[in-house]
Length: 147
Image (tube, rainbow, N blue to C red):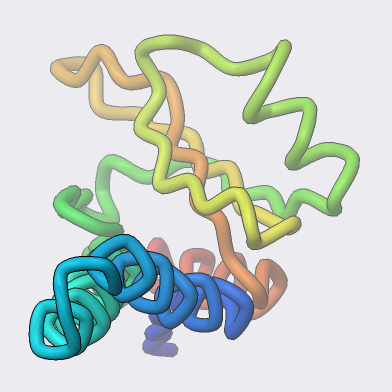
């Protein structure tokens, strides 16, 4: 059985923006004094860094006979066909082809994805859309776990 694990980390540019938020907070508090300015720099940068880290902490794993994507845990018995999506197909499936009932672990800064059919008759979710940097590896792991 092939296992797979990926963390959908935020791009480096988002960390630069988090630092710039701290600078902006410091500049807003500059007229009040030096100590509040330093507090604004540290507090603003820390809060925005926590936000970036939290958003980029989503994981996709294929382990123990299940697909674990974010908060969803889907057993291999409920998985259907998995398709790797290139940039154009991924854009289509997250915009005009998207189904409101689908499970979407979507990160706009990741251009490729995998679309996995959900075959459980008890589950109204038609498919799972998973942003991934390595769609072929994820599909191979899903095929291996399905048997």
